[in-house]
Amino acid sequence: MTQRPIDSKYIRIFDTTLRDGEQSPGASMNTSEKLEIASVLAEMGVDIIEAGFPISSDGDFEAVRAIAEKIQGPTICGLARALAADIDRCWEAVQVNPKPRIHTFIATSQIHLEKKLRKSPQQVIQIAVDAVKRARDYCEDVEFSTEDGARTDRNYICEIVERAIEAGASTINIPDTVGYSNPWEYGGLIEYVFEHVPNVHQAVISVHCHNDLGLAVANSLAAVRAGARQVECTINGIGERAGNGSLEEFVMNLRTRQEFFGFETGIRTEKIFRASRLVSNLTGIVVQPNKAVVGGNAFAHEAGIHQDGMIKDKNTYEIMTPESVGWRGISMVMGKHSGRHAFINRIRELGFDLSPDQIENAFAEFKDLADLKKEIFDEDLEAIAIRVQNVDMAQGAEAYQLEYLQTVTSLKETPRAIVTLSKGEEILEGTATGDGPVDAVCNAIKKITGTPSRMVDYRIAAITGGTDAQGNVTLTLEEGPYRAISRASGPDIITTSARAYVQALNYLEQKKKAGCRNHSLQFPPLK
Ligand code: KIV
Ligand code: ZN
Image (cartoon, rainbow, N blue to C red; front, side):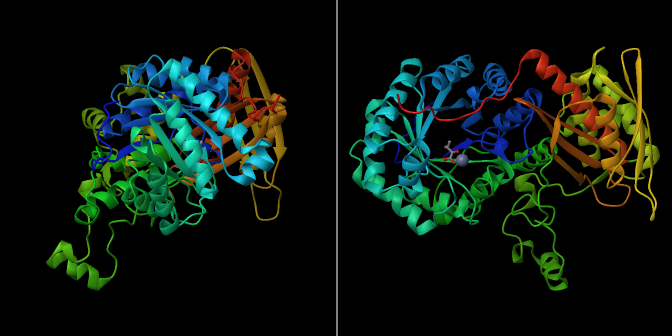
């Protein structure tokens, strides 16, 4: 990537939605979903996309490789433990991009060294140096991270950072992996690194904050004031446990308080809202209404006194405009009588590039939905577009299809479901009971198909408000080392759940056939 001087006021935005963000429980995405997010991130102007962790699963490798092949503009980065096999696999995935980066890491805190790695501080330094050198043999752009950096002894961190830079790392990331730090302490750590690492100016210092105590963005801001020039963050702040620093909050802090911070980023902030909705739709992780910058209430003024002020002068209560983040709230755009032309235009405006067949299917779905639901919102159209894009993936003669479904629930009886599936010419039928109608349907499908898989995650969210809203179901199945995630949406949550389950079973079969497994990620014992 073009290196800017370290003393410049430009902050690189390193987006890790597709890697750390995907580590949010239940957030896994397939390759085409990741590609869609990556292309929105590129349009938005992020500097680096961390596209995944190639050695962690065949699916992750394939997604990183596809992003590296198709996305131009940002640097495309893959994650690798400080192990030769990880680095080789990472390079295999990212090398096809004109701006590839290998990001390698090892834990540095006392507790991680003793309990997790069971290695001495000097052994870890040697592993880090070897890893950076191996990565540098492949490419010039190498990032090294000191996992659990915020809880690492300061002198040790300075020693390993100096050695990693000497070995050729061009970016050094000092993460607050467990979200333990605070702005004073974390800013102080970054300052300490600048003061005590003699070759620090040969690398860009990066930060990566987790939000366990709600301070990820505040800590990132303190770090850039102390000299960091790359910030790692995710859309909607998704990520491991309580998540990562949120891209939109960090960027809008710098933009809204430009006179205070004096930094700039390359982010086209008007694209933020679209990215936020897309990530939420594709991961099934709902954005809380009061979430800063992108929440449904972020620009709503409820109190009379506030409304009065807003009418007189927006600056009374508005510190940034909704337009500056592309916020459009919930807007009723269409109904039963809307025509095909208007439908296609709106789908395009929402950023979807559908093939002619997909447009046909989407329009037919839109008409069906308009018969059931008076008002169709942008969110409904997004759900339809995502649905038709995904439909192609789970088809084929071997796939199960949902043919019929009936559920019975009443106040006094145990919910029951009758389900019919087809598989090629074969018709399969079964009944089951459950705690509720969704549970009964899933039990019936499990019984009919005899699948040994386990449903490890199921979640449902209403796409818009109202009792006629569409529901968005996301579920994950696991069978040994294989995992499949699927999403479905529709106005009837029971059939939608059944569709998502059947689709997940089909994906799982495809993954098993292709041998596309998740790998266990243990750091190997020292020889
Ligand atoms: O939180 C963390 O330390 C990480 C590293 C792999 C950068 O995600
Ligand atoms: Zn992390």
